[in-house]
Length: 243
Image 1 (cartoon, rainbow, N blue to C red):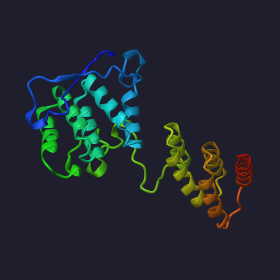
Image 2 (cartoon, rainbow, N blue to C red; image 1 turned 60 degrees about the horizontal axis):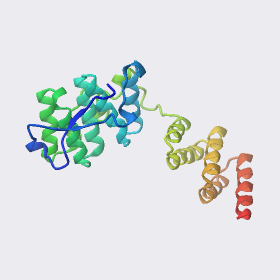
Image 3 (cartoon, rainbow, N blue to C red; image 1 turned 135 degrees about the vertical axis):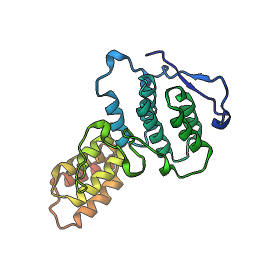
Image 4 (cartoon, helix red, strand yellow; image 1 turned 45 degrees about the vertical axis):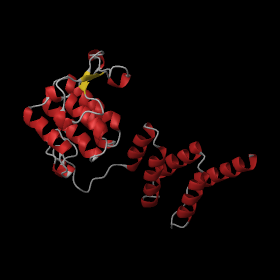
């Protein structure tokens, strides 16, 4: 599958007047789309769906999911992946949306293609796009976790903020990680591991102003401030004096 191609249209082509012949869009130029069979795990698609659900604005993962379903001839999963992409783009990125829809037409049913085509040429609410059991972002979150084979969690169950922060750190989204940790420290100041992770981010980014703002917030709370805050404050003061 390393040299497989995905059919697509050029930016100038419109879905309502699609040509009889298509240009070819070669995706194998990047390792992100090299799905060599002997390198794939049984949970490869499940992992892609999980990443899409956790990082919905990460466009490359959506396209990887679409491309994989296209190559694997997974019609229902492909339709769900296309719908999820359209929902997240919310009528933005029409050029890439047209590429994906026209390029995967041969693997969709006539009804599925008609639904996607009508969405591109008519102005209706993106939340009205119908999904299926593999969709993640359709109205009502239909089938959000079905592909992952997870049992629906109670409404009051929340993700651990430390786990969420590590996910952001993994993709070098350090500002988002600090946002999560700062809120978590305020809500659960007794968790020392939250303080430690947040302080490590402050130190690695040398974000003195953000550190000081949070330092004063915690100092104003009726809690015992961990010693590590004072240690990092001394580090920043020393770093400032060396300039």
